[in-house]
Length: 336
Image (cartoon, rainbow, N blue to C red; front, top):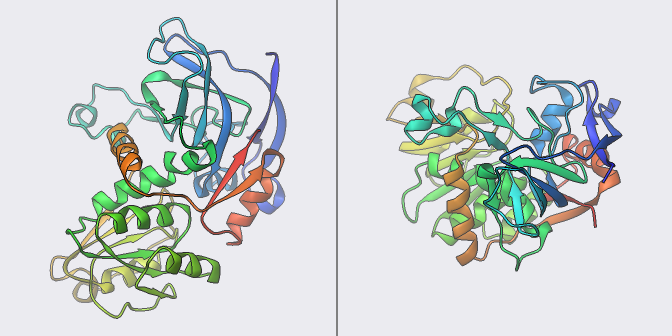
């Protein structure tokens, strides 16, 4: 293995200007506690778009995005013993934490100030091979396709954490604002656990998918649902949606904001938006425990991503489609 094909962010900027470039890179060598993964599939995420366009400040020039990676272990570092060669693993957004800070010690490693991320701090899965610390890789089932599994490694995990943060009571009414990759997986988890779904989103394809997945109400982003909600999750990266969600939840309700990037939130009116003990909560990355819990649910619940397969050489065009809201469900790139 000498070199490989990859996509790298040269200079962040508008996606229509081509900040993502096709490059040749040496195949990375795994360090002591790392494994080398031959990539089978990699989900394409709005976070990758934020990185390419510079909404997320770049950590270094030329980084390879992609953090929903499914593949097989083909090499191991000298200290790596958790996985055997040939094992199927997943690489997610969270790549490393210090393990000793106050947040790590109390089980909140997603808040570690020295946390690192796949496709941002280190090269990710928009490549033929990727390395990952074995402690941050997930053991994946062999009986589901790589295309099915890839979206769960970010869209699924972040959606699951958002659902936890939304504090939805059993059988409660859940509002979802925006209905892309993460939201459509979260909807399936919530519905399987007994929630009643209300979806507010733009784009007819997203609204059709929401109805197919059992939403009892589907409306425009700013439309008020016909009943008060117990909880809501804002997936759209638009701050102007937050007041709509707060107005829609009942007294004592919770709104969780799921995105890593959000445009400015308008000025809130205390009585309309926050009074009566409405909670507004953010979601920051995920813990490994979140991912492990999700994959245990995946083993027993009928969760299926609605995915469009994207050829590896079309990843840049797929990000353009995400930017212009021309997609629905999940996008997954394959190398086979």
